[in-house]
Length: 129
Image (tube, rainbow, N blue to C red; front, side, top):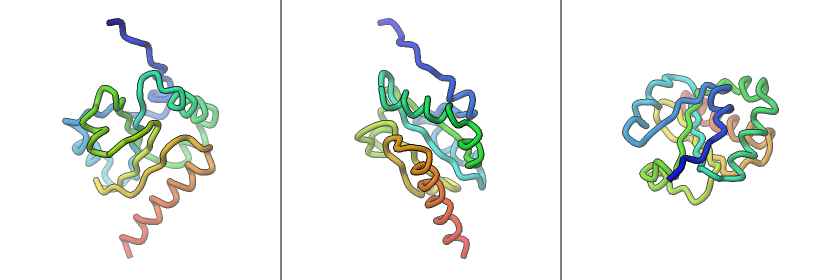
């Protein structure tokens, strides 16, 4: 079976570390005190490609969110898809110190993604009080 090429430009531009099930928790721990986000995507996923292109169209705004980025192809990492009960991609999960803070499903524009990031940061702030 031939391998379908994946546009990995966004992975490089945003320094996204690829995750598999075996190293998932250790990789999240490596984020330390940073807000981590895992971009779950799939091969031949039209909406995943739309999301990557939209992010690449506004790289400065995406970088300004100060996120530690990870990514995983859920068609290759089915264990992660089951663990996080993924019914569709693209999906982003937000973590802080390994604790899941929230998710965003589908790309609905930068403003909504920024709102999801803000909601995750608010949960961190509340936990510190």
